[in-house]
Length: 210
Image (spheres, rainbow, N blue to C red):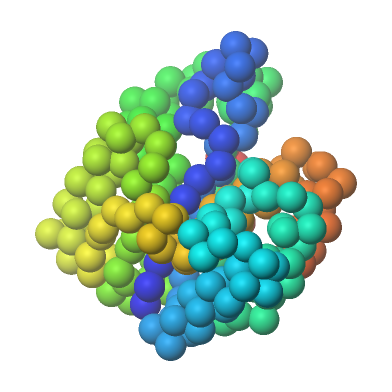
């Protein structure tokens, strides 16, 4: 089992001061290495199909709509699943007691990643987990250390490593799943079209607070 983790939005809790309303973490899973290799190859081929440089990164937030559609059409034919956890940080939803209880359990980033992996755990089966290296380094380093600690507790994760989407196409897929889930939560019309394109791959989609 191979797994790839990325997020959309930010983990800050001050929504009215510029923080995103939602923080979304997604994990993409491949039951077989052959399926992951086929998906990797399809993303590489798509660059040529679209006359894009071999180094082009398919980031959801920066892609043109036509590129997003092409990427999703190609990915819809691939064999993978995904799990999503979404934190609704709206103060009217996340009340003071819940917010305090939540933050006492660890950082927002750590906790959301833990929750999505708990949801995916029955399917991970000694997974090799890859986390996007980009973003705030302190989050990534702490997260990697946290999951490595899980290894010593005989949890399903077999290994943890950090890479960048510059060198790992499948992190780009995780980036798209997280971005699309975020747009879906915001009820953006365009986001709904993207969501329908990949919803058949959904394994779990959970919200916090429940």
